[in-house]
Every structure is written in structure tokens, then in C-alpha cells.
Length: 304
Image (cartoon, rainbow, N blue to C red):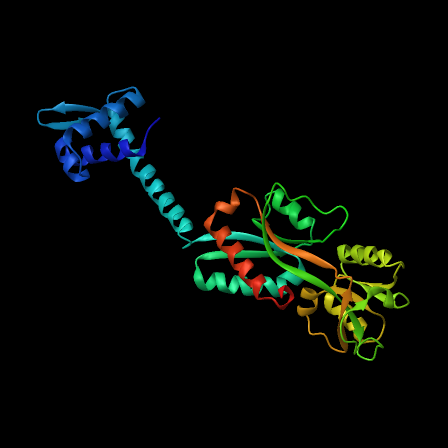
């Protein structure tokens, strides 16, 4: 195997014409140069230098190796500089996948802080709900995935093979029209008090969680409308077409008009996390992204 350090010494000998001159150029001794040349010749299996008087002359094999050495060393130098830039966060790329309410609340704050601190780090963003976002991470199609799971939910995902960075605990709240009988209620409302209402359901996982919570309270919600679009949920509630239960973070991602939020009992919460693979967690740009997402989560009203 040819080592880069041996190629650098060979080039120095070729340019200076002697071991001693090459040693002075490289900052090492003449015996050290001689030893490295012997090691290189042993690796390639043929002489590379012949002594002519006081100077060294390249053999045909030596000339060929010197020609290639320039490109090899230049490529290694470029690679070293690029890796050093990534390690020092002067460069780097992070592929982030987030669910919609995270994209509009946590992600902007985190990425703005990341860009300010490390302008050379680029982050791309795609949207996907869990478990799809977790699948993308495991399949190598992203580096960081924002995900959530409900406390005590049946069939909660197993994340034991992933690095889990907790961001915040997000409470579910009820949304009712401004003129609703419970709109001015102080304190929490039992979800059973909404049993006879028409319901507007959110994303599929939130919809499943809604049905589970309602059935736990002794009724099955009559879902008249279902949409993945949170502003649409708020708009339908504001128009008096029903009530809804949404995560607090989702409510904060839109401008709720014509609705009131009401605390629920028993409290229903979801854990919001950033996930990555163990090896990726050691990459400086990924680690910095996780740190900024955690700071953004701590600043969210839903976390308090």
C-alpha cells in the first residue's frame, strides 16, 4: 500500500535531487528520508531512485509515480481541508424531516440560530408525519427526523435503535367556536362534556388518538370533517361546524380566529423529539442541529 507521506518525500527528493536536501525541505533528517524511500520501494516492489554521483535520479517507475503523486497529494489535501471544514462547522449538510406543526414552530427558530452560528452549514427540509419520518431516517434518506408519540398510546414506536433528543411535551387542547357554551370556561373541561358535539379531526395519528381518548371517556366522537391541514381545522371550528382537539403546538402554528382553546382533563400529552442514528449523532453539523432544536423546544409556550 502506498502511503501519502511517502509520496510527499518522493516528490521532495525528485525536486531537490538528494536525500539531505529533501530532508531540509521537509524538516526531517537525511536518514529519515532514506528510510521512507526504502519503505516506498518495498511497497511498490521496484527501485524508484538511483544514485548518480552526489545526486539521486528517478527510475522510469519513479518518474511515473511522481507524475501521479501530484494529483494524489492535491486530492488528499482537498479532502483534508473539506473534512476539516465540516468538522469545524465551516461547512456541512443536514437533511431534516419534520411534521407540519414542527416545521412552522420549532424548525424556523432552530435553523435561524444555526445559520447565525454556523453560516457554512446547509440544512434541507422535507415534511413527513411519523412513522414515515422515522422510516426515512432508518433508510438513510434524512439525517434528523422530528417525531412525536402520545403518552400511553398503544403501539407506540420503538426508538431503541435511535438517538432520541427530547424537545418538549405538547399538551392537547380542545378548540370550540367563540360562542360555544364552554368557550368562557375557566379551568379544564372533561372531554366527556363534548360527547354530543360534531367533531373536526386532524392528521391520521391525531385522529386515532382522538378516538382512543374519547372512547376512554365512554363515547365515540361523531367526526363530520377530517383534514390534515391545521388552518382548515381551525377555520371549520371558527365557522361553528364543530369542535376539535389539537396539540397546542399545532394551534400555535396558525392564527386561530373565531375559536377558543380549552384545557382538557384528563390531560393528554405527546412527546416531541428529534431523532437521528447513533453514527450521525457524532457528526458536528447534526449535533449542532439537535442542540438548536432542543433550545427552540425549550422556548415554546407549549413546553411550559
